[in-house]
Amino acid sequence: MAPKNKPPKRNVKEQKKNMENGTNKYKAFKIALLVLNLLVVFYSPFVRGLYFEAEQLPAEIFVLISFALFWVMKYLTKDKRFISTPMEYASLALMLIYLISVITSVSCRLAISEWLKYCMFFCIFFMITDLSKDIKTRIAVLWTVIGTAMGLSIIGLDSSSGGRLVDMLNNLFKSLHFPVEFFGLYVNGRIHSTIQYPNALAVYLLVSVLISLGLSMISEKLWQRIISGACSTVLSVTLLLTLSRGVLILVPFVLLMYIILIPRGYKLRTAMLGLNSAISAAVSLLVGYAVKSLDSHLWIRVLIGVLVYIALTILFEFLVSKVVDVSKLKLKIKPVFLLVPLAVVMVVLAILINTTEPLVLKSKSSDSKSGYSLQKSIQLEPNKEYRLEVDASANESNGENSVEVRITSKSKKDIMFNTGTRLQNVSMKNIENNEKVEIPFTVPEDSELIVIQFTNTSEKSEITLDNARIVSPKNNKTVKKLPLAYKFVSNSVMGRFSNLFQSKSFFARILFIQDGLKIFKDHWLLGAGGSGWSVLTFSYQSYLYWSTQAHSYIVQIAVETGIIG
Image 1 (cartoon, rainbow, N blue to C red):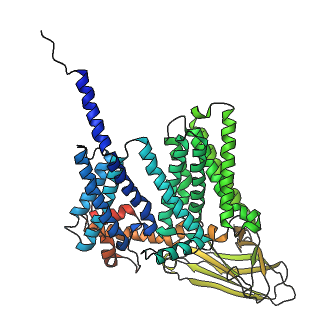
Image 2: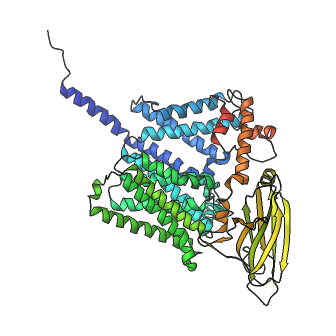
Image 3: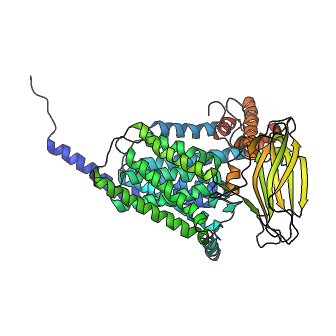
């Protein structure tokens, strides 16, 4: 039997060489396309996250032109690959479903606008995944995300400390006739940055922190780990200052899951780097309480946090180098030890929450526009009698002093619409030192929350309140203690994280979900099309409210694309 003819090895080598030459010939073209896509990734969060059509439409045109050039490049390089991964199939399917939902849409123009947005998302996602096949380009993509997050953090931190940089940038944009203006960056003590929504910003920053930890984990050189870790510290500080309750509650569990899912051998390093970031971010925020002169200098405190991170990282690397080569650090640890960083964080939080101090209410004539009133919310059992007790003192014994205590009950409807039923309104004058104030009240049947407001109505004197508690008049036992001030955490922060399930935000989101399910019931197959929620919500809402979004992505998708989506 005659042997089969085999092609000469020389011809095979020549074919490979020709393919490589063809690829290298258009390498600059590929890099240019990747850079164009990364520009969109970098730019979009700074123009309100492309949430509004004014910024969205130019970006869509830019991306679709890039997508056309992308296919020209694939034709020239004879690259026939299209989608292959489950995520690519899912993103393409979602884009097509939004196109189909245009047929049944309640607003054709808005539905087409939403479909174009998802076209843009798919194009960006597919182009970046196709163009970043090697580790270097993938790292470049990740650093672009971190760079964007750092820009958001710097602008957000600057806006919370005076906004000098923001003013300079706005003046620069105005002089160049550039249609961009930064505003709404810091509202009600929360950092919104240019995304203008603190919860969305918090999610973006959390993902960026995880990316920076991942880059620190795979970096071989110490200076690379220090840079990515320093970024994670700044991002963590900004994340905390968004005061996003949902995201901050999830942070410990997300980090724990992150450490569990990373490859074995890298868990110890990642856990230590994450703990370093948490410690340094906490130092940045708490050093102002220890050193009062730094309380109003946020940038100095952030710098101190970064220096703490660098010191901890160098110390960790030094200690490990005494045991094993750092470049080969792949120590194996038991899963139970992954709970140690979480336990440390929980202990620190418990200390911060339970370290209280007397409340000092400033006089109304003081230079500060706030600090003369405090509002505390608690849950009490309905249809029962209680008594509020608090120790009051006037800091100016010779001057006239007065304090007002108002007790209000709120039902679910009251919480939603900022109303309430007043139970007591007591005004006291000429308070002596450590005078015990007692105010009886009865909780109504429909009460969800009791709001107690202390107000210093004095013109000059400060009022100190301490040992506030709710007492049962039947047995004179303390039902609940009422912390009035915290040593290391502000009342505004603690107020956001108390009574989460009796907050306006919680009730509103439950209401949005319920009303969204009503819309879904009538448009269950193909949905109401893009922006269907904003068009139909007034016809289905249980109470009058103004919201263009369902504040639940699953409900939003269900309303707009039906069961298929």
